Length: 275
Image (cartoon, rainbow, N blue to C red; front, side, top):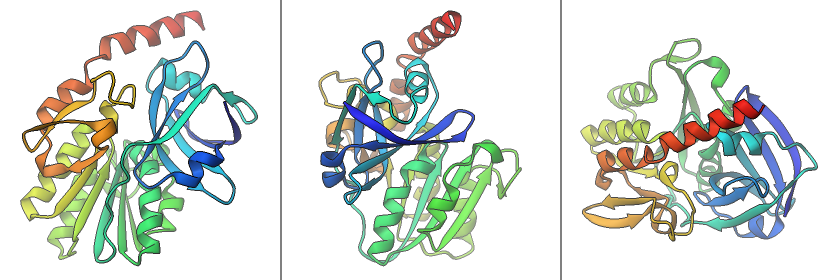
């Protein structure tokens, strides 16, 4: 078990948790994830590590409510125990030691890019972060990400704050204005990451994406996160979660990400009916 030492609601559907997990915090690296199960009624779900502190022995996670299991996790409060908390899992992301990097976080991905921003800043890399959401109220961790970025750009679909449009529109505008990014890292919904890959592909910019949205059990045993990268079979959880965006078969990945949509909807409907 792992104990929640702090909880903060970020939006009506998103919460930040600090969890006492000293062994995981000691070994965690940017890009890795943990497997979480709230209690015996819940499923195990993979969650990207937002931040970690070896000194405090805590792991920070951002949980966005998208189904029954994430609702169960979000219902936990400070002082509660999480039944299963396993990690760090996955391969750490390969980060450069110099140059100019753009980090793109859409939705829950805004929390996941924080650990990358912190590590890149320590290395002396010039970091520009692009954070997007549907509207102002759903923007998360912009202050925290901004504190570890040379420049921070907010994007909203409805134009309620920052750039009016998708994160790819802001990214393309920066490149066209002459911003010489050496590499781009994107975390968010699969469709968003595909759009980022298409955008950077036009400019020949090296790009990595985190394929964690298609993961299920996080250990490679279920096979649900199979994807094709450069014509080869890979597993997002054990071979990634980060991959070269221009080599990922996104058409296949998007289909795979929707495999359990009906089951997830039925589970959520049942949970709502039960109150």
